[in-house]
Length: 165
Image (cartoon, rainbow, N blue to C red; front, side, top):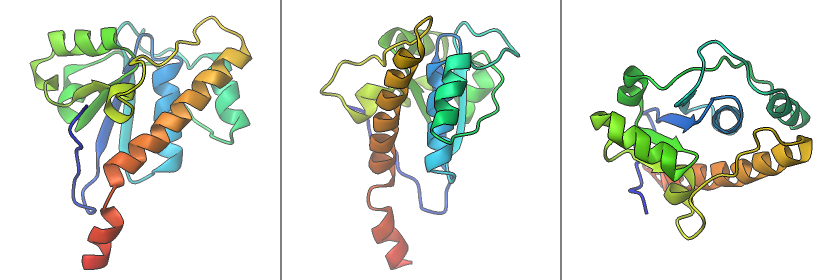
């Protein structure tokens, strides 16, 4: 499921990750993608996020254990960011449905991360909120695999395009 959005190799893909509080899943997804593919513009936000908060301590520890250093301030979903994004990837179907209900501009470019890259699986990314470091590590590993699949899906054929230039 999910149309593959491709841009020219010279264009920059703008990806917006959304979760509940912008303290665990969406900032980890943002950090992983920025670490792996610096040619993408990436932002994250939460539907119920408090502006100006911090990433959860366990999320920060897990990222640092993977040598991903990431400064993050929580942000709430905003219309400007919905308009900015080429692709909006939510952590759950409830997040997706709320974005689609609230923002007309989100139609045609909003999916759960899993439905976009792994439609054969459950559509929600597990929520580590309140869990121990092991729970956060499991969520990191899930996101890491999904981000690899996302990069492969979006950049598929890029190498061929570059050779033709």
